[in-house]
Every structure is written in C-alpha cells, then in structure tokens.
Image (cartoon, rainbow, N blue to C red; front, side):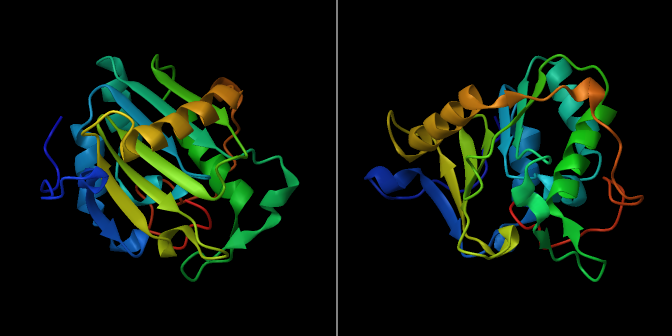
Length: 211
C-alpha cells in the first residue's frame, strides 16, 4: 500500500510507532484519507460509532465499495444501538446533542446505502467502548479513550507492522477477538433513521462521543 508517514529510527518495539497525537482531532484528516485510500486488502473500522468517518471523508461509501469490488475485505465493528447504555449523548457542534445510538445508526444507514456489496461486513460489539482500532492493511490508528472525554479529545497512535507479536499485532489480535465474539449486523434490514444532512456531503461535526 502507499507509504504514509516516515519510518522512525527506533530499534526496539517502539519502532512500530510512526506518530503519536495527544488528540484524535490533531491527527490530520489527510492521514486518515491516505491510509484508507492506500489500503487494498484489509480495512477494519472498530470505533464505537464510526460516525466521524462519514462526516470527515466525502464519498466514503463509494470509495469503500470500490475497494470491496476489487477484492478488499472491509469490516465495521459498532456498538449495539439497542443497548440502554447508549442513552448518553455527545456534543454536536452547536446542534442539539446527537445520541450515541443515533450515531451508530448513521453508520449502519451509510453502509446500507452502499447497496449489496460482497466484502463489506458489520458486527455489533459492546467490548470496545474504551479502545478504538482502525486498521488499513499493515498500518493502523489506535485511540484509547480517556475517562469521560469525547473521541476526538482522546490520543491516537499511528502504527505500522514491522515485526511479529509487536504493537501492531497485539492490537490486531484484540480486533480479531472482538470480531469473533461480535454479533452479525443484517445490513439489508437497517433502517434509515439518520437526521437529514448528517451524511457524507453534510456539514462536518466534531465531538463524537466514542469514535
């Protein structure tokens, strides 16, 4: 895939850390775009809502569909919007607070709008509320969520796989375990419950509660 980020000069396990950002909002949108667009085999989005992705990346659904049609495996892991713990709401840039369950449904609706697409999968999991992992082939962005802070206020690590059983592999194993214990989402039955104007072409909204 495309080379993103400079290789570090470390020689220990930390050499897999390309960059660290104190806030997710400090990680350039261009970095996320380069990782997504550069991946061709395996993309996994294990944020609790993944809501911010649709807001920050225009035509993301079409871009992912093209990758899936070319043979890539694309996975989305989200919280279950039917679980009561999602009554919490996050900031939404001057608009009324948008409930976490609604943010999740926006992601599900966006996936549904991609239409039938072999290679795109989604599962529910309630075990990754404190850690988001975004995998793009041999690179990933990891967000450990801090206390009650919003997703974009939590730190981000940019990792590249350079060794067996290193940092990348540890987080990849975590993602695999979550996926294997998740519950399949039937995308064809997802309902369009998103408020008007909150999709790819809508205004950018910061302050995703979980990521």
